Amino acid sequence: MNNICNFTALELRDKIANKEISAVEALNAVYEKIEKTDDLIGSFVSLRKEAALKEAKIIDEKIANGEEVGILAGVPVSVKDNMVSLNDLTTSCSKILYNYKGIYDATVVKKLKEAGAIIIGKTNMDEFAMGGSTKTSYHKLTKNPWDTSKVPGGSSGGAAASIAAKQCFISLGSDTGGSIRQPASFCGVVGMKPTYGRVSRYGLMAFGSSLDQIGPLAKNVSDIALAMNVIAGYDDYDATVSKKEVPDYTKSLNQDISGMTIGVPKEYFVEGMNPKIKEIMNESLEKFKSLGAKIVDISLPHTKYALPTYYVLAPAEASSNLARFDGIRYGYRSPNAKDYIDLYVKSRSEGFGAEVKRRIMIGTYVLSAGFYDAYFKKAQKVRALIKNDFDKAFENVDIIFTPVAPSTAFSLDAVKTPLELYLEDIFTLSANLAGVPGISIPAGMADDLPVGIQLLGKHFGEEALIAAGHAFEKIRGEFNLPEGADK
Image (tube, rainbow, N blue to C red; front, side, top):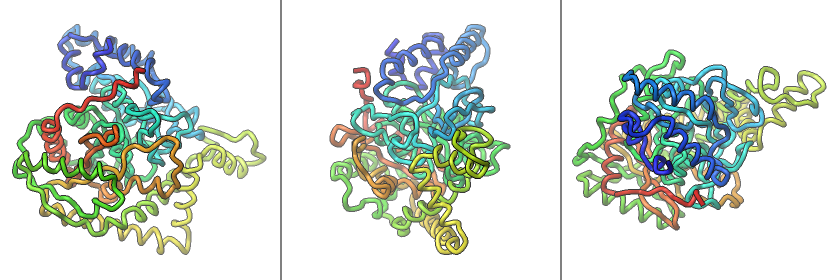
């Protein structure tokens, strides 16, 4: 049973379709793996074994009867705990939603189910996706499967760990400032943040509505392409989703990338970067050269303003989005309140964690009278300059190459200030401000921990990222996930 967990999503899908493995067998193998490993790793905050088993049996019956099934039929998939699903706990890893069960399916969940995927459970995350370590979760700690003394990254740390520990085949995360790509790099898996508006956010518990984007994590680029074929596309329930036609992303696999121009921004190779990471970046660029790509130096001059811009805009949107959690309609309600005002104040004070409260306070401040023009409005103008940098760069290059993070996964015990933690996202958050797609792909090891490269593309340029990423994977060779989680 355990070798089933070594397959990619594509391999498993084909084996189930050809009746070499049943969907029930695949599901049982996954739950057996979770049972063996998750006490140590902590990827999941809830599982849906009973419902998943019923769904797997239906898939097997359909295949036995020769009925049509979806392109992910029988493939076990995990979903981040901020995406609503019908009758399943969905808490955004916050005390304030500790008992909330979804009353509908998020669009991405609905699309997964329609494609025949089996959703096995919800993965751990930083509370309301605010953090880069998964340490702000109300429920538990998640550990990095490569070294359980290290963080898995965040906020989609549970999603990345569930792939790295071979507990599922595709996982959905959300990315507001790097929350798919950074944990993907830390855990040695592939993670994609699609273009803003490529994937519906309906049913995603909002952090920063103009920045949030749902995307897949998987073992390799082929599985990312497969997942994107399922989750991308227009949705009546989300006014920000593009009506632009969705291509078949799997057609971008096995493409010749000779002649592709790759831009390397000087602003992303900063002092203080781990020298081993810099070495891996240079080796990766040489691999792209050997594939026939042209490497050119570029500049994204407003990059230095990305961090302060993000930490004005994201908290501002968060303070607005999180106003709905009031202790009255659903979720945690303080038992110590004397009146309605007291109930509102105490429920929020007791229900939100320290990082969420910090960002609500910052956001409320920058939106307040007297400070709106000085902070929020100015940050929006700088955001436009950052987007213009990318637009200008993409006039001359096809994709942009950068590191994902300035370091490898740091220690769970590391005491970092909020500012030090925010700096972990320095290479990823510009893509969210500009709305462009990005992908993190494992490129090598530094200090026995995985290191990813980041490729950024033009708006709706996921095909180029998949083509370049897949070509890189082939020349890089196998990148085996850790076996240590079984110990």
